[in-house]
Every structure is written in C-alpha cells, then in structure tokens.
Length: 436
Image (tube, rainbow, N blue to C red):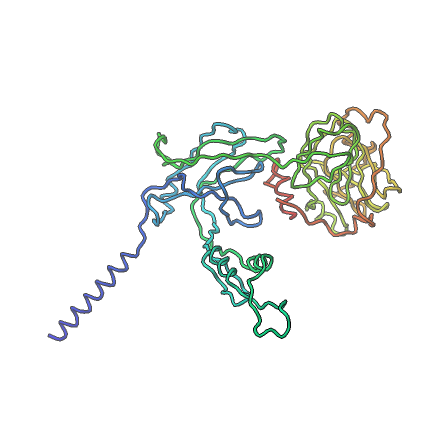
C-alpha cells in the first residue's frame, strides 16, 4: 500500500513538472510580417555586423547603404522558425526613387537593443552602479548633496548643497546606456552603389509575403521615406580641403582658380569657373597587388574612385622627396609620370584635367614582372582627355600643406576613412571606410 501511494505521488509530481515545462515552451509562429510597429535598423559601423535602431521616419542614406526592417511573428513572443522564414520574400513598391533601389531579401542580423538601464563602473557620491532608466539616474543625481566649503570658518555646522549643473552633467556622462544583442530576422533593403552627385528621394512600401502568394495587397506593410545622397561641400572662396565624408563638391561661387587639397600630400589647382558639381571622393588605401610585387619599396597611394574630369586642365601637386618615383596606376599596370619637381613647393607637378590613381615610391617599381611603362607626355590623363587649357592664366603655386615635412614616402602608409561598398562603383565607399 505504501509503495503504491509513493508511486502515485511521484507520478503526480512528474505530471505537474511536465505541465509547467510545456507551459514555458515558446510557440512557433505560423506567419510573419512587417508593419508600422517594426523597428528600423542600420549598421552600427562598417567593421561590425551589429545593427542599431534608428529613426525610420526619414532615413538618410548614401548610395550603396542598406537599411533593415524588423520582421515580426504573428503574435508577440513567438519564435520564427528558419523553415518558415525561408517561405517568405520581400516585396517593394516604390513611388519615387526606384532607380536608387538595388535589391531586397530576408536575412538574420545581430541587433543591439537598449535595455533601458544606465550603468557605470565607477559610481560617485554614493550613487548606484546601475539605474533602470535615464530619469531614475537624473533623479538620483539631483538628490546628491555635498559639503559647502564656501561657508565661513568656525561655522557650527557645514552646510550641504546640491551639485552644480556642470557637476550633474559630468556625473551623468560617466553612465552609459546598456545594450543587449540578439539575432533577429530582418528585411534587408539595399540601395545601388554609385558616384552620383544627385539627391534621390526613395519613397514607397515594403512587405513580406509568401513566395507562393500571387496577391500581396492584403499584407501589412512599412512605409519608407529615405533620402539617398552623398554629403556635399561647396567651395567657399578660392580653396577647399576635400573631405571623404562630403565627397560631392560644388563650385557655385567660384569665379576663377581654386586650390583643392586631398589629405596632407596632394593638391590640385584649376580654373573652376562654370564648373559643374563633381564627385571627388578619394582613398589612400594601399593597392595590395603592387605592394606584394615591390616588398622592399615604401609606397603611398591616392585613388580618385570616379576618375572625375574638370572642364579645364589644372596642375596636380604631389608633395614628396625629390628622389621619389611618381606613377599613374592604370588598368594595365603602372605608368611612370613625367612630373616635374618644383623646389619652391617641394612637390612633383604635372598637368591633367582628369584625376585618376597615383603611386609614390622611394624606389623604382616593377609590376607583373616587367618594367614600368614610361610616359613621355606631361600626364596620360591630360593627353588622352583633351579639354581646354587654363587660357594662358598664371597658376599660383600652393604652399606645402605638410607643415614642415615634404617626406611623404617615408611616412607609414595612411590608415584612414569611412565608411564605402564593394567593387566597381562601390570601391570608394568600401575603401575609404576600410581605411578608417
């Protein structure tokens, strides 16, 4: 009898545990969607695959950028099985800007979600190391009292006063918002990489529907309002330091010669009157195939991704030692430029209207196992592209922007800038971001 009772109790306990376990099991969803509650994400940076939530009401994108829309299960808290996600596709309907759209797909990405907490490793004034919200942190900081050392000596009691506004701001700054990362299904929307100088409004809707569905009109959607464009800079006066973050340059107020500076070692002087806007994005990323075949050489590079052409021929200055070797990097290899050394500027100078790709070395280079072609003209770019000259005007020599050192070749190969996509039209984007 006792054995039977014990067995019955054990079975009851097991059944109870099983029912609890099954109650905690998350249900797999039967359908997925995107709707107005879906979060919008973009990459945290080009060196990571982590997505951060952004304001999706008016996205600002560069050509070649991607944005991501959170895919939701039918009911909150349900799992999205891999097999189910594979049965769906992304459908887009663009009212404007369709030419800037590349592709769309369903994928998984690591997403950083704010927990709401604010934390610090070094709490001050007796504050806690963690607060559940920014408001809770601010309230705690407001309540802090410190001794008032400004009171006269001999006072019976030292008064306590709140922190000053500057002190409060400094304390709050030591706390950071806590994030947790998790993988999510997202709809990835890719824009076309290009060197366009235009601004494009990309407006429309995005849905996820079953691949077998012939009618998506009833599916919920997300409305997209985005501007696809590079940052712009206008030449103000007669000079501009061209930034990789603002590669589109306009010449609206230019009435003559301008001096364009690219980094510390390159300057282009040209008459830019009536010059249309240009994409002047550049990178100083090393060309690995040339580096690999000339291991003993110290080589610096500059590459103008879109090979921009000006209306008129100008003078390109490369600040380097007089015994340096100057090359143009072409699709067929290296071409030695017949650049002249200007002692006043401590720079090699050649004429061109089209900016391409150049290499500067401390020794003569070979490429693909053969000697480098010699250029008998002032510049392959100026001779092959023609165009009007500077109209007999005298070109002003630039001051060396290298502030005291003309030795570019002996410097370490430049690390560098942002962030821009893959090959072809995307080379500038990816290369400049790799540098940074």
